[in-house]
Length: 132
Image (cartoon, rainbow, N blue to C red; front, top):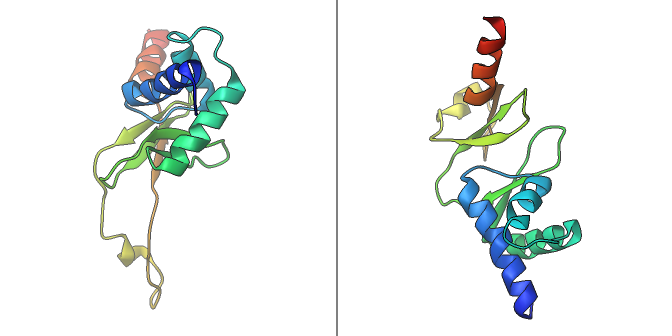
């Protein structure tokens, strides 16, 4: 990207992803980055995300049945949690490991991805408050 405006937009988009500390959808990136760059457009977010992916600065997080989310490229292996109420995705620390034991006999596991589903702390609290 070239030019002052593009640089400011790119910084805002990358800053939104970094500061979230969780994988964001393009719509979440747009909402967060628009606070710094009013008038930021959806096409600019998608174009910038594509460039950041190509450069290796961010990584796509696949969520079953949904569009990818994006997070800062991690060097550490980790997994994700998706809230079934608000649909946000969060990083989980670590990995249960030793998943090759779950594969059928004679099979070799080359990689794995794990997503847990449930309610985040915010939505869990709202549900508990509604039951009172």
